[in-house]
Length: 84
Image (cartoon, rainbow, N blue to C red):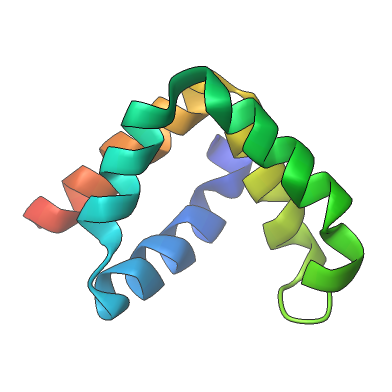
């Protein structure tokens, strides 16, 4: 988590700007174990995703979705960012 904190800040800023940060936090919390399937989708789609997103962001997203602790931490991070 510590190494991806700078990436999380970029994501949170963009999600907040688009007005979907609270939706993403709620979806991550509600998805539970299904986030692992999301991680697999990210791995499978990596060649296409690399045309639009930096490789380190894609790897961070897959890692976040694979680990339920990181998923909850990012949802909490989004909620904290909302309150600031």
